[in-house]
Image (cartoon, rainbow over all chains, first blue to last red; front, side, top):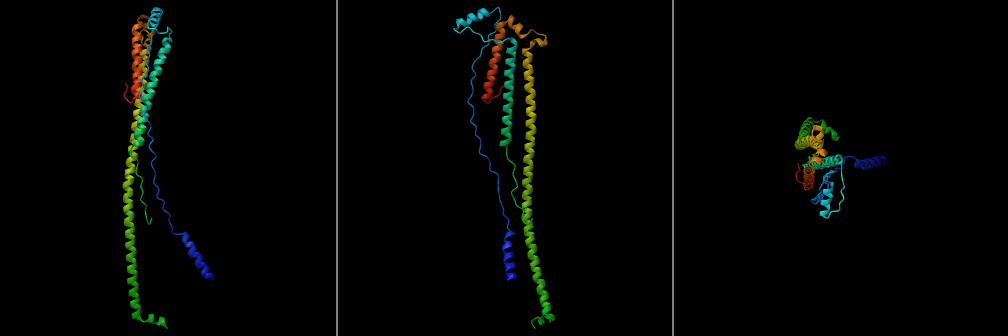
Length: 123
Length: 137
């Protein structure tokens, strides 16, 4: 009886050995982002008026002749220069960001490395 | 008794030969299996080596791309700084011993106005080009 119990226990335990579960998993590509393109932008025209003590009256007169309300939102020389530099800084920043986006696209759209999928048997 | 037949030398010889033959067959079978398994392993390892080479090539390409991109961005930053410096030189003419923009504007307001408006239009055109994925210098 004892021998039979040992035999049954051994046969049950043998089920725990020798079975290997193989999980063959592969990475799945993420769905494409497909960002819609921004519509082209048409900038509104801007015209500066250079106003000096000598031509101020002429300029206001011309504005009246063109039926434009004679008000000038002015900038002194220093602030005009600051504005010009700010615009240039923005332009350079956009150029830089465009290059960064191009590099990201080139890098992540390029061919992916191939991963070894073979399984060595009998170690 | 039945085991007495094993004391017979002829039976022993036959048994010995049988054991040798059977063990040889088992050995050959075992060796063939080993050879087959090792051949399969070898094929897989060859495949693995080839794929690893391709992975290494791909990684080297990526590293090359990273180096090129970094160099390109560094160049762009230098170019960008140069352009800003160039603009500042144009705006702050007094630093080069010339008349300041303000003094020039007092003397020739129409000329400065034209220059300023043309420059503004150029900047806006540049923004439009950039947004429309075109080049702008």
